[in-house]
Image 1 (tube, rainbow, N blue to C red):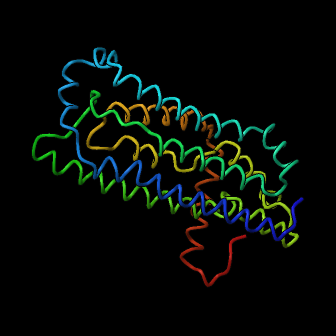
Image 2 (image 1 turned 30 degrees about the vertical axis):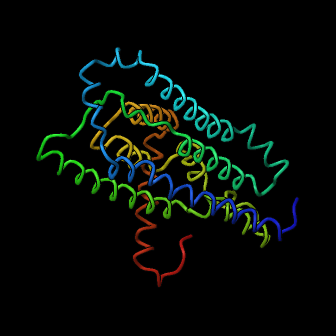
Image 3 (image 1 turned 45 degrees about the vertical axis):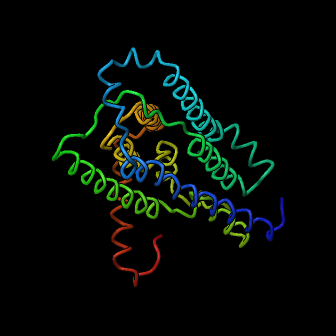
Length: 262
């Protein structure tokens, strides 16, 4: 086990990398499609038909490349979340297991964003071109994206952001308080085992609600929607517990003088 003086900088470095990647992800998924210039060639290719467009190598090759990047991210995110890999990482990296997982996820997502190949000549599923839709649809999408990101950040805070990022594990270890998950109730552990992504609906809104849904954006939205759907296994018991915890924490946040939550 590394000395405590090395654990804290490592956990902080992972957190900074993840935070910066999150900011870049907002730009990648929201600012670029909402504020970027709409290609004039999309509508023409769309009228030629999807089958004909996908036979064009200038369209097909970037899509295959983007698919490979997405599969790399999904593979890393899923493989490192398995119990076998987590046990191996805990054996060799100890309390830094969660921080390492977060850092690797951030790096995989950075690869996707930095090497993503747009397909400006590809067909589009929909596009707001005619007025007044060309003005109001982007504005509506912008408002929905802002609301979705605010909800995402709020939910992450309610779900103990420090623990999700691996900071709390190192903090507890340095102070000799043990593992944070050991202090969770069985109902909380059951929920965490079923809910890997607590912001699924908001992320789906960000992925799909865009003025122009081009070929590469459709690939991104489809694959991540499928992945988010497969990563969830909530039942009614989980939903009741989640609703009760959210109400309790929101009540405590509105009354900070009452002290910390249990």
